[in-house]
Length: 300
Image (cartoon, rainbow, N blue to C red; front, side, top):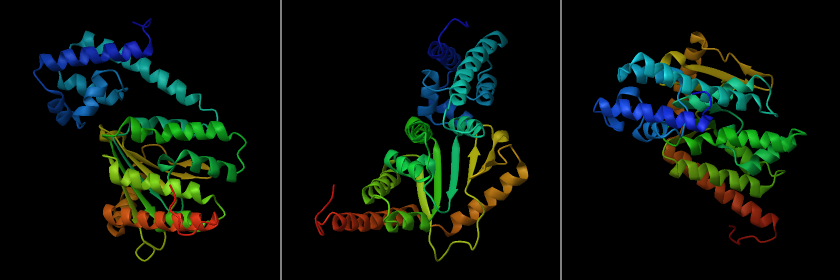
């Protein structure tokens, strides 16, 4: 078994899963309902297109009553593929060691909830915006840093059927439209990217907390990760010093969840937030045209 490539092991694991599901007379949709995943995600797993969290695989084995010998083979294939992923994460050259388990966990989570107060979340950033941010911070390894952040942002593309909810302060948009020391075209591209995600991504919701309604104080930016097996649910805060409390700390998780609910209760609706982005787009188009000496001329 160990001589198979990682890709071949994932395909073989999927073949066993399909055979067991068919034997039980279940469709992908029916199995997905039991496991808490959509039919397209079940399809990807069965085709070996994505790795499976060990706890989800255990639940899959239990639901389909897979024999111990076959279950052991499945766990072997899955462990090898996950080891490959962990190794790839550890090869992240530009990221500090504390980021590696965060990267791994974000790849596995079924639901991601992110609050950012003064900035655009890394998962939502365009490549040009990433480049400008890293250069502004004086990074000397900009290309590696951008590559790694793109891997993080690729979650939205690789797993469109997962749930991604973003709440940002209106100040994050204000910075894009008013920080004119930055390239206005970079800011415009970033706003358009957010607007495209808000309008067209099936799993992403982007909402803003307006100045007039936001709480007086919210702690550091935080992320809540929820998994198919909710025993793994956790949250963490990202600061300039790294990640705070990444372990599955129940008290921290519950506190962040309460903060999330509080922010969600005062945030604009998804449609209102899209309109806010449209207004920011119009402001940036006008500014960029004026800066280029072409006031009133439409920009592409």
